[in-house]
Image (cartoon, rainbow, N blue to C red):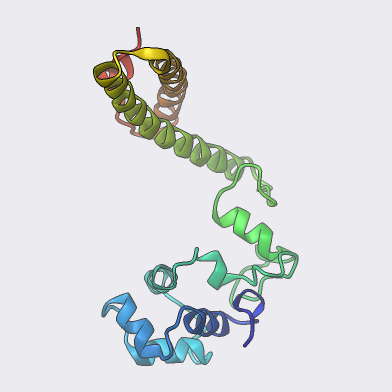
Length: 199
């Protein structure tokens, strides 16, 4: 069986991935997607009779197959291979599979760097937004952890370290939030959350 990452078309990658996931037929994939795609659409994609996918079709297939969209769109097992997607503009000429993945994921330190200032700014902003989201989740986790440590363990040696990590996360999010909001992102800045346990 051909490895999905080096299959030469979107349809071949989908078919190989489907089989590797234990889905023997296109109907199995349609059932996994949940009714928004018919068996005939999936068969046409797999056999190359339908070369262009709607974004929703691509995302539904990738989610059902439990892979990032890059695995379907590019030959990821051969990172230096050129893109094999039909209909792309000349801006994609010479872009390898791994460069495409970095571009698609807006990776700041990825294998691809935009040639324009606007493209670089967009990548930087998206990475700051990802960091802000991760810090928000970390603050909530640390606050819950600190409360457990103080209530159940009477503080103990861990509370001080948790408090320090919480302050670091709060300082970082205080720096990122206003910068992103100034750039046009409308982020909820919950000062009560940021200030909680900050002392």
